[in-house]
Length: 136
Image 1 (tube, helix red, strand yellow):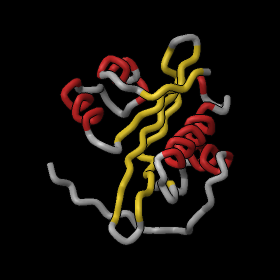
Image 2: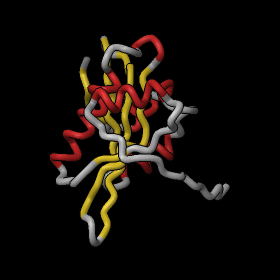
Image 3: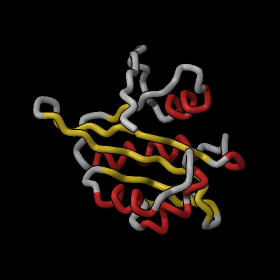
Image 4: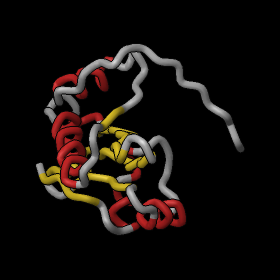
C-alpha cells in the first residue's frame, strides 16, 4: 500500500468511486486551493483503494486542530487495515503541522468507522449532538 497526498484535480477525480457522489472538477480545484484542506489516498497496485480528507481549523484561544472530515475504503479492500493506516497518516500530517489534536464525528451505529478509528488509537470523547443548517 502506498499512501500519498493528492495534489491534482486528476488524482481527486480518479478517486471519485470512494466519495458519496461524483467529483466535480471545479470543486476539486477549490478543495486543493483551500489552505488547510488535504486528502490522502491509499493506492494498491496503482488503484485508489481508500482516502481520508482532513481540514485544519484554527481558533484564537485554542490553536490549530485537524478535523478528519471523511474516511472511505473501497469495498474489495476493507478489513485490511487501510482505514487505520489512512487515519494514522492523517494524524502524522496533523502533528507535522503543529495541530494540538485531531477529531472526527461519527454515528454510533457506524461499526466499521468506529473500529478503524479505535484501532488507530482514537479515544471516545463521549456523545454529542450534531445539528445542521441545510443551505441549499
